[in-house]
Length: 228
Image (cartoon, rainbow, N blue to C red; front, side, top):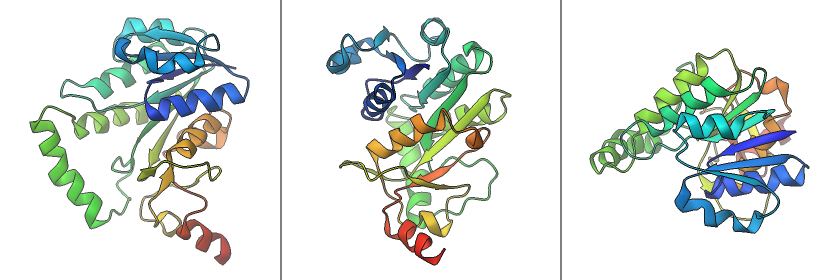
């Protein structure tokens, strides 16, 4: 399988590169020019396409001939970076390619998610402050995901809980809605978020799904397994 990883130089992206190589995939990494050095540890094992991930020409070159595309949707700045990235992938992905996008729990597909007061406060207060500082725009990620949801491509949108570093705890559990008991612990190892993204490439049950994930070893996941 030939896979393009859009946002390969970030923490999540580097873990995805690692997992993809571990599965024997041919990997093309896309990242801004200033991040290329972060991929030096993979030199000779992956192809790197430098450039802004919201640049359609960069994306077109990077995902040509790919069977799958893994996309980190980063709401950087206030000029529609996530939306531009998502649209470029949707426009230029080869027919039939599996497209897997990452985002946060604040994204909802059907309005049925139930959020904690803490997360709602973060979005309501932190979101406008981040935009005011011209650092990030959460609404940009919302618009990007809405465009993916409306697409007829073979997409999956993976919604991550709070993240922590650490050794892998295995493939995370998932549910269609934030607020479901299995997700209550709201924690996932970043390396396992990446594992879920890569595994989704070959899981057709996740096509046109927006799974919210959490660690399979979290207390809520273990309690759910015990009750079953």
